[in-house]
Length: 188
Image (cartoon, rainbow, N blue to C red; front, side, top):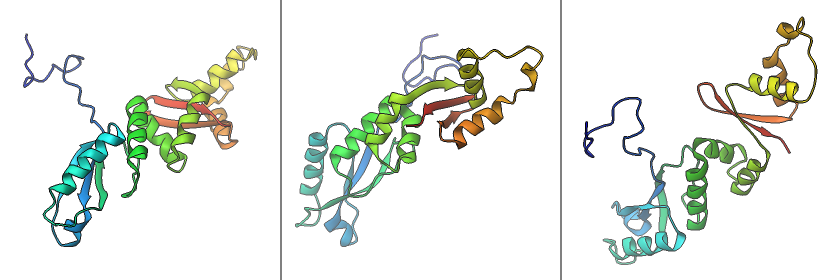
């Protein structure tokens, strides 16, 4: 079976088109907006200079003669991370690159650290890995530490409670990104 661009890939295969959204922002002309007109453009968040060039072109085409101010009115592909309407294009493009690299996990970290990209990036220095559950992580870290658990006691250990205590004590941060998919970070 030959797939054309219009033909979706069969379920369970990797041969379909990449449906991951690119990060883009909708930048509006404030002069037009304040005069009851919608004028703006969707712009891919690639490089700050490219974004600014496209914003200048959009402002030049504004139906209002004095259109020189802009704001971000919408965005997509940022996996739930928030953007200010007056965020700098450097910030927007840096966040877009971070989300491209880390996906939904990156967005969750960004939100966790109060929209501080530097802290979210630094957190990956303490990344412990992906597990099916936090309990699996707690069990693995305990067994890897050399702690010997007698076989007669093995079934009495509550790994879920141990993982919960580790999180509550501030030892680890747990981010769930899917069913049976959690990411563990050591806390600083």
